[in-house]
Length: 133
Image (tube, rainbow, N blue to C red; front, top):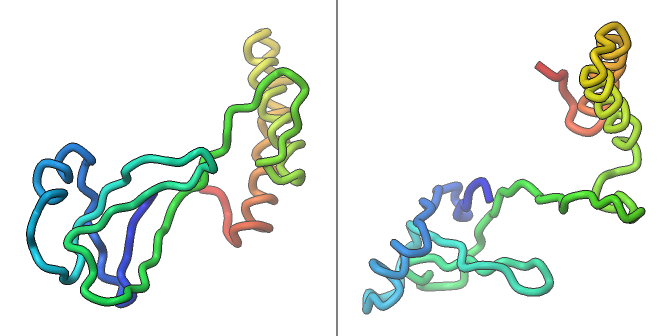
């Protein structure tokens, strides 16, 4: 998770779970404006539990900004369902470039790296609206 914001864009600070438990979990403080949060863990569906302190005094709207985790790809023939299909060829080009480097076929590796970089730039522009630095 990148950050947790209140409706007015006030950032709530992250607190390690152990510290949160030691300092806030059993606090008798009344409800108020949250200023710390911790992540308790995930359930079997992949959802996470986020605790804030103090508990909001009223119904609150918060924004969570996060980076999605993509599971490791296995070699058992499973599909790449978590990676958009438009990214597959770029991934293959990058892997092929690394393999050619490993083989010490540097000329082929360089050509594949150029193809890979062009593919990534195209995908970045298409999906994120920018140019790779």
